[in-house]
Length: 140
Image (cartoon, rainbow, N blue to C red):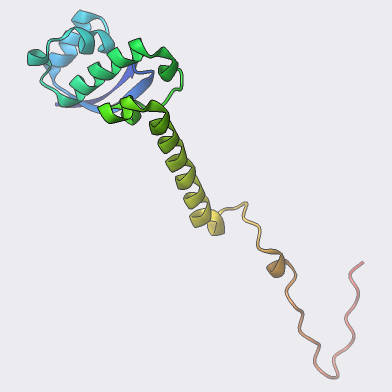
């Protein structure tokens, strides 16, 4: 088995690390492309749950080109329940992506080279000089 990345125009994305057999690679060469292989190969020869789900989604995208134009990852609309209400699936995906971004920003904010401390930490309270110490020389 090989792990390969495939560009899919029908799914509007790249499928990363897909496990394929050497025979499947030869069949893709014969059919012309990854999309043609998925669309034209009968299920008995395809023998792949992921391939079947991709085929169903490709047909669904052909019937609903406005949803394909959203440019979502293919796994967002992979389930039939998500295809039944694609607007909610899109909302859910985008809200989870925004939440993940906020969480990462909060988690890595302290370690970022662009991190600015809070206003209270910008000007810490200065200690008084010890008794008998010379007066400080003003800076500029």
